[in-house]
Image 1 (tube, one colour):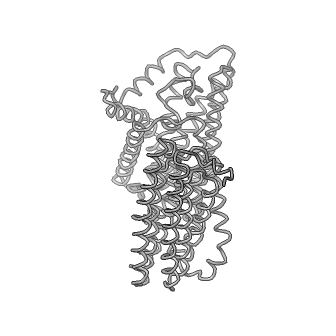
Image 2 (cartoon, chains in turn green, purple; image 1 turned 90 degrees about the vertical axis):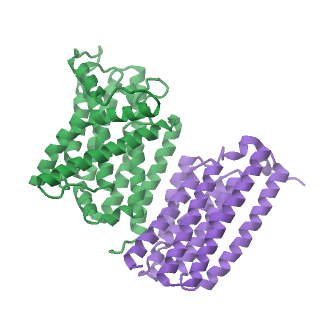
Length: 319
Length: 226
């Protein structure tokens, strides 16, 4: 832990929490414009959150403490990941937590808790959504681990901060086959984990297709606000991980105001661009059938495995 | 071209070769399979050209031109024409691989296993010249050949079997380019035989599919007839 990491952590906490709903707003706006609608403006998600937070907290009859704790756990794990993964600076606020396995476990813990809470309600939709989410999670986690592992082979460490620092010092690494394959695999994982088209449609409440929305169907008021905030923060964390690992330009390596401002601006710009590209891509795509989701995820797992394999097959010039 | 750039470019081209093989296995639409096959031909051309430029080998340069003409222009053109004919005869049915023997998820996982197998069995070959970066890419050529063979035995449509055969052939050519970069005579012979073989197979298969089965499924091939 050093001063650079702590400053980065504080900045990230503010930016990710404050910016996540704005990113959701930007993505909705991009979609709306491409579909020929006026859109609701990029501040609408914040207005929705404020409205929800003012409402009375109610929980369904017969639910246990788990149902009330799940939004807090989801938000807390996502927030911890948002603070520790190196987005703005190459150092991490809490070095050991920025380990690949710790971050993946943190993110999985949030999802698993939410799925338990959905089961806790005892409704048909909750159980259905939880079962689907667990299916996707079980396929996504190995891909996530393996694809980042492909990058850690060359950096010689599974610490995300070390991987990002190594990539910043050697930018040619980004265009190696291992890195490109891992980028594609991680992109598919991002789409699946954050419930975007073609795996899940965040805008629908159709019982046959919904995954994430089915799990949070019973939530209302402040609890729903926490879950909505955590979901948009997860999207920022995943897009930020993509940008830090594969497009590490502009990340602050020194503790100067100019470098930090550059790091913040680069992070915001990269995540916004990735989010806008994701939203634009969604307009041209249809949701695939639930039974074909494993096909997509098996494909991304294969790409991740090939990324690891090729980092062993194809020795770099320095090895 | 300095050594670092050579290694990076060669690795990139080999990565592209492997990814296009996976995509050919993944996709069901024959039009998409042919498109990725064309891209794979480009990657193969790039491998030959990179080795030629690095070794200042004019013969290999000519081979690269031959690979380009055959695998980027001629074979995709033939495949596309055969597809157009099949489409005219069989309506929309010929356009996609509807029911492969192994489903797509399982075949993708099988491709992962085949890649690791290729790596394991080609280690002695790589050990022969451990200093050469081209030799380190041999497992990728072998993996492409194995994936092509797997696709060949699990596909049912004549057109996609043909594409799988050519995928396997691409893998074999890649292994040839990566192993025998010095002795170009063997490769020249191999490639010219390749042209002959592939063209003949294409001719025979497409005309037979069109004439005998036309609108029918390849499943009818299960019964023996006079």
